[in-house]
Image (cartoon, rainbow, N blue to C red; front, side, top):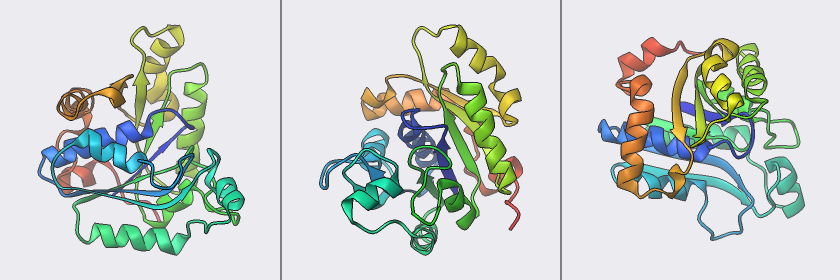
Length: 241
């Protein structure tokens, strides 16, 4: 089980989820992707989980979205404006448990950043990770604030008793500037966790076969074999409860 969070909106969480899912499916694993809340899309339009399914393109993949709100806002705000129910701790935990019973890997994709609120009572993406006792993969960008926002995210995870499994750059530019090159070099030290992959920008526009090939090249050096339970256990410890 793995929670994929980010340093903010637009850093490439969905593409990273699809890349990790593609690697696991290629290893013969049954994979499920859960999105507790999708914002910024009307009912009936394809959402992030549908994009994951399109990019992976084949294999044993289940996708599920719990709540959707039309306004492109934080889930708590979007839910309030729509008048529709917010995701709940018990609801998310039950959905993860049901998926975990039938799949080898469950990927939970957060909305926005780690402390983006799902509920008015303060439930955040970090609380979801805690509720399902899962390590977190942090997706980050390459801007001037990449090092500080990534370090803040991993520091909060550790403070909450959660495991930052690694950091992935979700959109590596074709022509990286000085800030991007420095972020690539310094992220592991600043974040205190391994650099688990670098995905080139534009991957969302690839056909499934090409997407899987690029994901394999970009993520396999770190993720290779990680979906074997023994290998996965060696790469992280269970969060304290």
